[in-house]
Length: 133
Image (cartoon, rainbow, N blue to C red; front, side, top):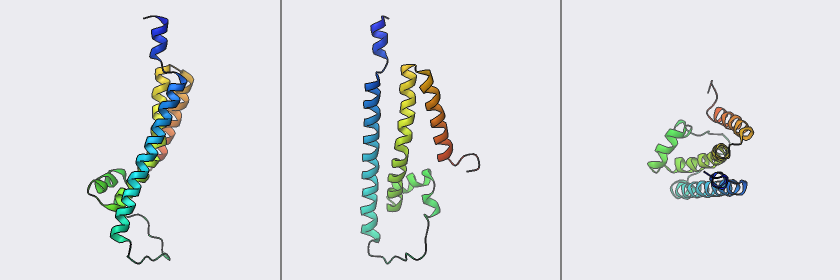
């Protein structure tokens, strides 16, 4: 393996930036489309129902966990589809950090591997509710 071919196997900073930018763009577009479809379907089903804004009603239990949200969306539960769009929107920057970690591993950049690993661990810990969660 020559120095040129070894260098070519590593990703350049521009390639990493391009990949991460595309990941964010695609993630936001997919999340927006899913949430919009769910919103339109939800309004078609419930748009004419009266709403009481004096009392806050949180999301029902079946829309508080990712597994039940995905199952609900697959069964075309409209509120679950909207919720899935929000989950995808939240997951997009987390996926960006994970993809950054892969890129830094391929670039063999030890400092950024450590920093990105710490950031990803903190994100996963906080999003999963931590130990008590």
